[in-house]
Image (cartoon, rainbow, N blue to C red; front, side, top):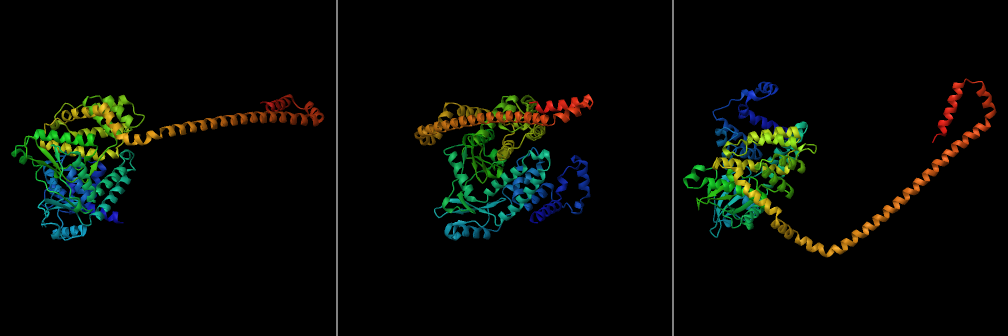
Length: 542
């Protein structure tokens, strides 16, 4: 019942903000156009608000899951009209805040002390208000400037209702064969587990500490420190940073920042996280990325909000890196073989046919600057290819795909002429060489050394146990073979005895009834007698 009313609310919001006006009616199938015309949505006035503002307000009304969706869309200016993209940017840090007094009560309940005792200063007005939490400026008693991140009240119940509805929609999509291979239920479940991790700020704090450790002493990315004694499930205290939001290109240009170097460094940071560390920031929308301008000629990034992070299996890392390098080399047959080996497409797929289909989609992309590449067109082409070859969406790669979309959006914003392939190719080639070369072998050996040191003393015992097990299995196989031979001999004897018994019974019956039978035979036509003789021969036939 709750999901039903939530669905009614979603339909109400669509009608209230007249989101139907965003749908290109001429591109809809005929039945869909008829359905739209039958719905009396036209009774709601559009009002004076522009379409971008109506979409933003609708997403804010629907809740955090939909705000997250809008945040991702705000990075795709190639897919959205400029007025809508600019309006959706406000979702990143200008969501309607909850009262400062409520924030103080949550902090005091979580930390077990009054705000006045915890901080010299605590701003009642939030610095930023996002979909799941909002941030307040504060100062510790030692003079250190910090920010206090606070989870929105009652957000857990709202998100559970939304995810239940999304799960129901995913189950409905499973009915359609073409959509089933997209694993909608698995994707929603994976998104749910990731999204709910954001409600526990201790997990975000741990992710932040891990990312900071991975980029320790790096001049490419800075991650602000966590104050663990003042961090709880609904409250997190973190070092305050100063920088320019990455989306403010005019401010960065006025500060003399080298935008080309900044864009290339962003690509390098992304691939470093994915391949070197296997731990990547998976919520890299512009509201979470700042730029330090201490050295404009050698700019560095500042990353916040590590609530969503991702990682891949070693197998997925290898397949992904080899796939990307094969794209760079335009070796589409290798791409096809890797997809088949990894199980991303059906086992019966022919590599040459799949390679030809991939070539048709990807060939126009290569050797072009980022501003001339339409990834939306590429995704559409790959989706059509997937329908032909039963390509399956990999739930473990969904976060990576989302992060790639964000990276593309940031690249377009900072430096549209960035050559993504040229920037990433040297890094991947170096990573593959290290992974497969002597250094990779030595690193793998060091990683497995504790297990090997524990297992080596046990090898003689394990070898003896294996030999004993092999001897027992050999004896068991010999016994089974001998028993089978004995059974076969007994079966043959039984068959011979049964045959002899049949002949004996027939001879006995013939002897007893010979005289009347011979008299009867002499008075019967020869075909009937011949049939009887053939019947007896068939009974005796082995």
